[in-house]
Amino acid sequence: MKKIVVIGSGFGGLSIASRLSSKGFNTTLIEKQSDLGGRARTFYNNGYKYDAGPTVITAPYLINELFTLHSENLQDYVNLLPVKPWYRFLFENGEYLDYGDKLSTTVREIKSKYGYQNSKSYLKLLKHSKKIFNKAFIELSEEPFESILSMVKHLPDLINIRFDRSVYQTVDKYLGDKNLNKALSMHPLLVGGNPYSTTSIYLLIQYLEWKWGVYYAQGGTGKIVDALEKLLNKKDVEIKKSTEAHKIILKGKKVVGVETSEGIINCDAVVCNSDPTYTYQKLLNIKPKKITNRLNLKHSMSLFVLYFATKKIYTSVKHHTIIFSKRHQELLNDIFNKKVFITDPSLYLHRPSATDKSMIQNNNDTFYVLAPVPNNLSNINWENRGKEFSSIIISILEEKIMPELSSNIVNKFFVTPNYFENDLNTYAGSGFGIQPVFTQSAYFRYGNKCHSSDGLYFVGASTHPGAGVPGVLSTAKVTEKLILKDYGHNK
Image 1 (cartoon, one colour):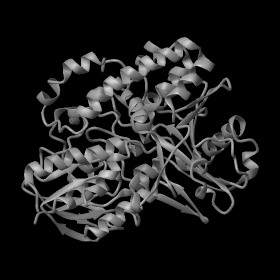
Image 2 (cartoon, one colour; image 1 turned 180 degrees about the vertical axis):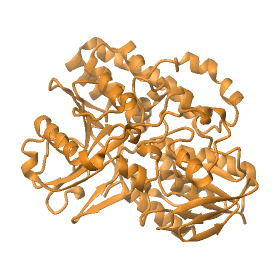
Image 3 (spheres, one colour; image 1 turned 90 degrees about the vertical axis):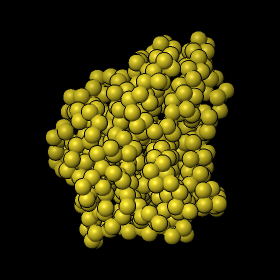
Image 4 (cartoon, one colour; image 1 turned 135 degrees about the vertical axis):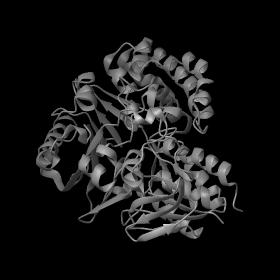
C-alpha cells in the first residue's frame, strides 16, 4: 500500500486526506500547529472562541463529497445554516445595499436604490457571470492543466467570455453607478485579488453564490474542521499535530520522505497544502520547473484581523457587512502595488450571531473585522503599528455602524501579516498565496503536480483552480486525479 504524507491541515490538506484515504492510500496528515484548520482554525481567547478565517461557505456539495466518499453524511457531523442576506454593502455616503438570499429581493433592492435600468443591467451581468461559471467552474475547475496546450485549446471560449477584462471593468460595462460597481466587483478580494487587475473569469463567484447559496457552519467554521478531523480519525488517517515539516527528502528526483520537527517520516509521495513559494524555498531549496513560476510572481495582499466581543448586542448588524472606504482604486493600488501603510481601510465585518445565536458567548456579541493590507514586502513594522491600526478600525466601526463601540468592548486581540508569515508559513505573509490574475491562472498557477520531483503534489490556494473555499476544495479533486493517474487505486 502506497504511503502519502499530507503537509498542512487547511481545507486543502483535509480534503486531499479524505480523498486519498477513500482510495485506499496509507495517509498521514502533519500539521505545524497544535490544532487543525490552517486559515480556518479556531482561536480561543479569554473564554471566547472566534473563527480565525473563512466564514463564507459556498458550494457546500464540495464539503459533503468528502463525507459521501466514505458513505458518511455531512449532516451527521455539522449543520450548515443559510445566511440572510449574504452581505450588506455600506458606502461612504451612508447608502447601503442588502445583497443575496433571494434574487427577486436583491433585484428589487437595486431597483429601489439605483433605478430600473441598473436592476435590469444587473440581471444581464448575472447572465454573463453564469456563462463564465459554466465554462470556468463547471468545465475547467477540475481539469488538471499539465501543459500549455491543455490551456490553449480553451482560448476561444476564454476570449468569448472576455477574460482579458478585469472584474471591475466587466462590472462597469454593465452598471452605471460607482457604488454598485464597488459592491458587485468585490469578490476577487475574497480570494486575494485586486478587482482592477483580477481576470473577469473570477466573476463566476457571483453566479456560484446564486447557484448554491451562502452558508455558515453552526458553532463556527471550525466545526467543519472538527467534523473532518473526526471523519479522518474514523477512517484511520494518522494525524500528527505540533509536527512541522522542515525538509522534503529526495533520492535523486524521487520523494522518499519528510523530515519533521518530530523525526523523519518515510513515504512514497507528498502532498503539500503548505504555501508553494515557501515550500520550494524552504522545504525543497529548488525552483519550480515551469518557466512561468520562475518569474516574479505576484502574491496577494495580506490581512489585518481584529477579533473582539462586546457587552452590547448589535442586533442591527448583519452577518457580513462590507464597509467601503471613500477611496477605492487608489486604496487598492496602495495595498497591492505601492504597499504602504493605509489609514482609511475598507472593512469586512463578521457577526456570526446574526445567523447563529450560539455565537453570543458569555452574554456578549462576538465579531471579527478584517482589513486588506499590504503583504510583508511592504516592510511595515506591525509590531509598532498594530495597535494604531486597531484603533483606526474601531473608530471607523464606531462612526459607521457600531455606536459606542469603544466603551462596549470586553475582549479583543488582533493578528497582522506577521501571523500569516510566521504561524502559517506563507510567503511575505500573503493572505491567499499568489494573486488570481490571468498570467497566474490555470496552467500558469503553481502546478498541482511538481514536474521537477517525482511524487510531489500540491493543493491549496496557490494551485489550480485557486483560493476561496470552493476553489481550495476543488484543488484536492484535481490533485487526486493526478495521483490516481500516477499510482492508481490502492484498494
